[in-house]
Image (tube, rainbow, N blue to C red):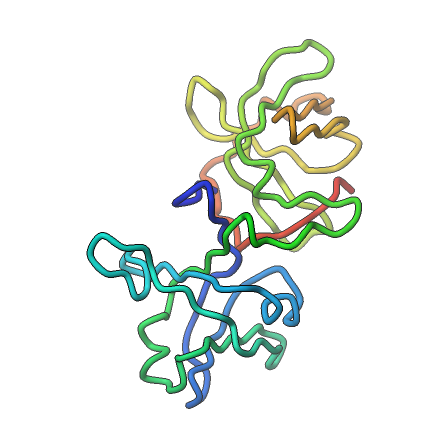
Length: 203
């Protein structure tokens, strides 16, 4: 994941409009009540512009007025967006929160976006493998980190589990790993964009 601005983190991706009240489906990793408790957020529209941005000014901040689960999916409603027509402008946008306003991660967990940029080192050889450039969340109990070599090329996929990521030092921006044989030689293919901000601990 590459944030548009290091001071902001992506917390959800918006989908299609739901109903007539301005609700919109969203993909995000947090409980519904977490979103309602947030201060103002910004929305980056599908065309790359910030919602409500004026020339020379930042995008408009919105509060999330309502968040709930509907048929297993997260649905959000923003203050000032009260009709389906108004919500249409937000379809396929992304929701961003200031890092300063972000709540503390749950005890024992780390915000995944805080791992982005950390140097990844092989604990056995002290060789620098690359840096965390994103993560992937599959239908599995753990997160997979994307580690891109400093020389460039396709990212390596490193499971974020304690047996592999033996030391995570976010203040020092370093992760030491003990990869199983063959992990670093895998041909990983193309990366998948993460879905919003989440917190996790190495399983």
